[in-house]
Length: 592
Image (tube, rainbow, N blue to C red):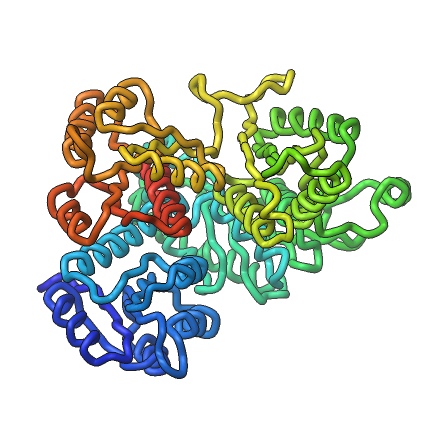
């Protein structure tokens, strides 16, 4: 049976364009067409394509409006490539702000169109697979601990339901007496039972060796969860017998502790502690049952200390109203909290990011009063862009230092992008530029608060890009654009310099001109790949820069090892999008 082909939706009000694009794509993809944006919405919902190739400007409804409707009203998020026959650089900026994957000028070459579509679909598939591997528990198929806790933190804050921790009783005996292979089979079988007893909307994850967690959405009575646990205890006996063949009588069962949301709170960390206490209660009182945490005096036997004095003290010390933005502190207060956070992270294996934002003014003649207004405006942007758990201070007249606990690299990058975008929209963006540095603080930081190092290198998110071109103007523009978005840039003027540079250095991404004198991009990339293979270092993502459709087509045919190809002169949004996508693919591949 033939492998199922990917489906492409082409939307254009010109029949000739539809016919040409369909003719190019039909041998490789299943193609559906629409002659208007309105028809495109209908066909897309019926056909569910893997990619949309759409004209930007059409009568009645534009391609941008069509994509906006598909995403906001129908929650459809297939990759989109826009195309237009008009020379409009602002259009390219708008489509990339909409999240487009690529942009094509009409008329297009057949080989360029095929290359662009193949690259978009291939990258999307790689990201999807690598993301799945990084978020899923390989044995059970459930969400892993990090991923499920991220989803539960959101769900507990906004949804009603029951949060339950499920622990397999006496599971250690299975591993001790029958080996880990039998233990893994028990876990797989139990995961299948748990899946049968939960709904599609419930959130399920594996958080330990024999420990699972479930958020049963829109359930408010403890009896329903208790019945599910009782059913699991009945069903797991049969599953155990099939694996162990009744050779050993191991009293395998399920103990569960539950807490009702939002009755017992909305903070996931606190709810987890309460559910964990309920599990402990079950373990101490016979196992194979479910207990629901209750805070009333007549409820479960989970006693708490008299809250009267602690409530009064909390009222005295606490904020009367908690704001939704970051805490902006002076240097002295910031220092106390910063040192406490370092100790906390060392003790509880937590992480955080510290970020330094710097304003660089275009002119040295700026007046002191205007200087103060502009720096304060950046401070307000930062304060309102951050969470109320983040802290910040003005560390110098033109600098702000931030501490953001409990965030991941992807989250910190979104925070930075949001800040830079807000600054670019401000009234002062033409008077000063904003740059940043960011470092991760991890739990093995020493008590003195020195920068954390991993393998001797700082853990940083200032990703490193090497740009190679014999045109000085291209190097300057690339350096300016990439640095502006927080990337560390090294510029080189020839393929020979690249090869010498990479003998000791390893940037995250290489931007390489295709056409250079002496050693061109194609030859340089071939020699780079040979050197990487000999050194067994893995392949550095390489994005080739081409001057024309002909060069792009030639590069795509001759250099399959290139990660991507970009046209010069490049639009800033396209350049940043392609570089960040290459970095993300490399990171996911490295972490998987």
